[in-house]
Amino acid sequence: MSEPDPQGDPACWLARVCPECGRIADEDPPTRCQNCGAEIDPDGE
Image 1 (cartoon, rainbow, N blue to C red):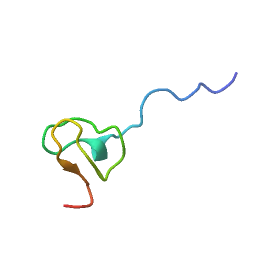
Image 2: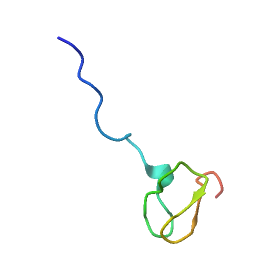
Image 3: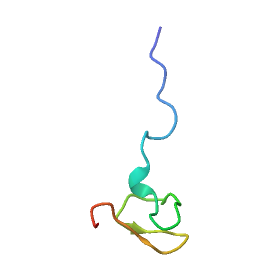
Image 4: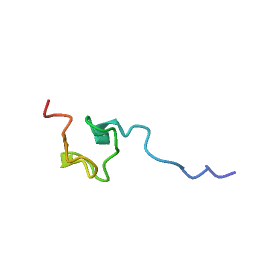
């Protein structure tokens, strides 16, 4: 019997969550939120 293929999204998208509005960014930080323009940089705090 073969191993099942991995499925789903990565376990943690926390680094991509906008601190202002909660939207998940389309790319890894550092980036800006496409919704509200806030900076998303978990290392920048």
